[in-house]
Amino acid sequence: MAGWPRLLRSRRLQGLLWTGGSVLSVGSILLYLAQPVWTTGRLAGFWAGIVLLLTALWLRQITAPGMSTSTPRFLPPALTLLALLAALNALTYRYNPELDLTRARLFTLSEPTIQILQSIDQPVEVIGFFKRGDPRLSRARSLLERYCRYTGYLTYEFHDPTQKLALARSFELEGYGLVFVSGKNHYYTATVDEQGLTRAILHVTRARRKTVYFLTGHGERAIHAGDRSGYSTIRQVLEAENYIVRTVSLAKNSLPTDADLLVIAGARHPLPQSEAEQILAWMSTGGRLLVLVDPQDPLPLPELFRAYGLSLPDGFVVEDMNNALVTLGPHGLTPHQIIPMLTRYPPHEITYGLNGRQTFFPYARPVSIASESQSGYQATAILTTSPASWLETDTSLSEPEFTPGADRSGPFSLGVAVEDPATQTRLVVIGDTEFAANQHLTPHVANADLFVRVVNWLAEDDTVSQIPLRVEAAPPLTLAPDQQNLVLMVAVLLVPLLVVLTGAGVWWARR
Image (cartoon, rainbow, N blue to C red):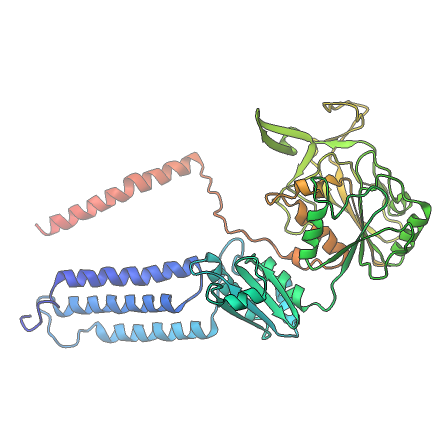
């Protein structure tokens, strides 16, 4: 092969081509598997790697001893294969098929989101503001591409806010994130997930915002109080969910006609008969009501509870140490048995997708379904304690202790949802008000999410709540002892031994 330049015959050049081609093609595939979007850079890297590998193979063939400089026999089928791969790539780029094999369906939109997208009848523009290198940028782009497959009204664009200062300032941005614009409405979200994007679309496309009223005048929790026991955080969370949140006193006023939902959050004093009758009349015509009642507080609407077969026994629920809230103090981990911690929930629209997330209820009373429905309504427990819990009736004890004959064993329901199909009435009763106080609405628990889910269900606005929260996490791998031994034998002994034997065989053959 004297006619060939020495450079083409160089083993080092062929090795570099093999290495570079392998790194580019395999690296592009690995990037796609990590984030299944074929960007221009990934496509260029993949095909550049293929070209380098074919070039290395061609050089190896034509520079091998005894080979002629004519077209090698492998080249026509190789070019045919390359053409087929190019055609397949063009088809996948044109039709963009996806196969989601993740356990949590991380790359598949839920049915509620698809229904919302297909119902959009007005243009929605999404403007993303992210700096270079922000991992949320590729995540937002991938997610919005899936959204656009189900509606022609959605468009999106991305900008670096440092380069588009005027545009960023026009939306009064609080940070990096997405701005949804439709008509005169716009909504900012920093959350780049399906729940956040679908919520934003609903926020800018709905013609009317629903109104939630909190009853006042009887010692209820204050939605404008920012102290530890106030409800200002819940008010802000509901407003972020596109609700109008107001207060109402029925002492001198009637219930507003725009009320979609009424909340009685911890009335410390009984409701006057005139106010109770007004609420009962409203409920009989399809009203929506959320009642939160603490132990030892008077029942605000005993007639309504009896009508729907509900009872709230006196006392508070005590959990065993394995199902109670645990905090870290100066003396280590301390379980609080008077604060039940829930991670499993009965099936209901309110609790859909909530299993595995923690909620806790300090000093809560049970809400029991005392009798079966006689009028066609449906009463369902939505929050239940463990079988190891009990109802402590002696509120004077500093350390609760189960007393056979006096205390009742669990499990207990801490919350009940009631629906009357005949009148479209909906009612939710929870035996605790403290769970929604400012001091307990921390990011690592789902207390605020539970409150929003209840409000959404009562207002028949629970579409977003039905979208599962998908978390990309590696599933735990648990191996039995014999499986651990097998992995050890294969990885530590068998594989190295095969490499040694293969090398020895090659050496022996070349002796």
